[in-house]
Image (cartoon, rainbow, N blue to C red; front, side, top):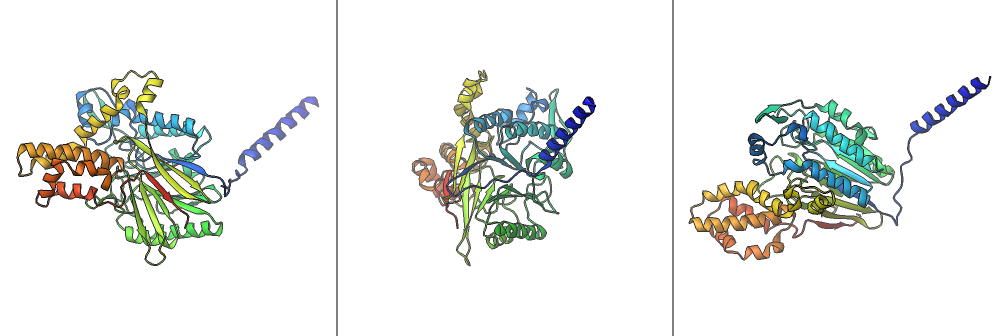
Length: 435
């Protein structure tokens, strides 16, 4: 009899625990005098060390990229460390989670998300064009390049089910887009904007736009703000480099978001730090598209968004302190211990080399080409870091810039002049009041 009572007691306890676990968690409210903090980690392009080696072929591959693939794991280690120290409420990853979408990369990246979520943070992801059905999922062995297993859309949802999909209060039938409600009065609309994996272009189809309107209607019924998170850009972030970065049908998308009274879009993809706005002629409301620069691309930073129901949104960038992290963790890699110098050299040698090729074709003396390249390199550092216009004043006064001004119309001239005709001088800080 005694044993029977004990067993029955255990069964009751198990049932009670099971019911408690299955009961829906209460969604908190952000009170009028409170604020919440969100990290935006764009385009981390994670690459597992299991797929790499120290070889001539792998190093040659690294030198063809604008992003510092060798240290993607270290950068994410620092993000994890910053999350523990600074305690944001939400961490979002707007696409290109992995380098070329290999399954190994995705599985390891998910383990990293597990660690962040285990600290009590809300973590949400959306796919980028690199992440799914990618035939260029590479690994390096014996000084050769091989392809490895990638993942499809169903596998993406399965791997990242705990980072938005299981929590979704609505799913789009046509894409991997979903709506989540981390707070009663602040919702996230996570949009899958890739047109055709793994092609770089973006598109939001008509059915998905209609679904966005239905999501907005739900939010309005509950007096909730919606923030859109998407990989591709809603607005053109460059006058000359926008194709395959801005969604193809951005006019329809802009009109839909204005119709929904949505103010803020958080994007990535273009790898530069930039803010653009669009004002509705009909309502005078403004949409802000904040493109946070890619984590493994100079200047190696992520975004922080603070939301207050009374104040609105405050956005700023936070630069990774790689040198401090290397010292504190007794890392012996000289590149990391002198990271600031190493990062500038990597950026100059890798990304700026494409501009060097363009400059080489100019019909000007070699010494002028050197001056132009020097100026272009320094302006690029500012440009990718989010600085434009008067922030480039010192460089506008250089000999190299004067030479560019006098050139016949060409790509380099158009590219450089675009930096001093931008919407914002500083794209690293922004305050957005509530409509």
